[in-house]
Length: 230
Image 1: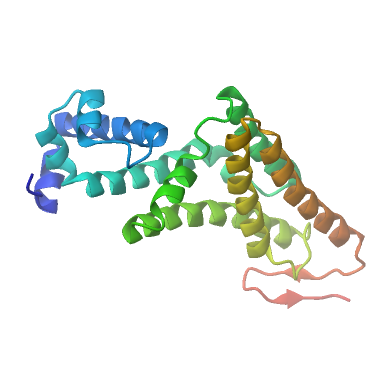
Image 2 (image 1 turned 90 degrees about the horizontal axis):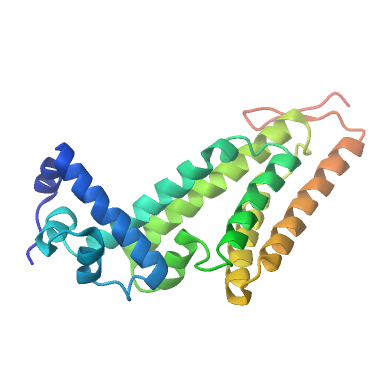
């Protein structure tokens, strides 16, 4: 099937009916690719699930690669929006534990099947599709930024030391989440996930305790400069 230009796609999807059809295709493709993998999901599979014609899929997404890219963007946005109420307030040990435990409860509910929607796509596509890898990297970067932002607020308040590397802590927690989910999926048990994230959060809690026990009264300014009254 020939690819359609971006202008045609945008114009077609700007109508209410067009948006509903496009969204139905996208939701069906996202669900199938999560359950079956990208390689295991064909255009006819999506066509049957979404109850649309093949020409409609090609009209809105160009080809399977375009559809996959749209699914990646959809999953990035959907996962962040679902978690937004917690992600915007990851500035305490209790908030970090609650956020991570919510994910553990979701794993328990599905017996750890499927793992992380974005992580599953990354495992399948990162080495074979450079454009998909970049899209997935943006999704992980947004998650990391949310964690880092909360930790930075803790540092600004003095809960963490002025020299604390919040970027490194955010990367460590995100890696524990993704690695823990993979191990939990393989073992069909959320225990590995809980252990992995709790080790990192316990470490952050230790860093908070160390900062509170320190006689230093250094503070971290938004400009990244130290103000000391020692």
